[in-house]
Image (cartoon, rainbow, N blue to C red; front, side, top):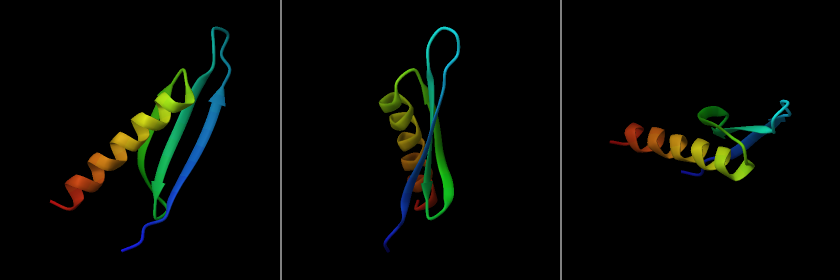
Amino acid sequence: MLASLSWIESISDPRYGPTWTCICKIDGQVRGIGTGAQKHVARDIAASQALSTLIKRHQ
């Protein structure tokens, strides 16, 4: 099975520093959402959530 992975990334610029929000989608469905002060942190959180969701789904 071949899955389609996509990301939606946004940044807000509050007074004391940016906050990244990354959404991980697999086959068009949201599988993870992460936020952090750095883009890679937000992506890692979202990816970890997505992986957990996929593992639970296939148990």
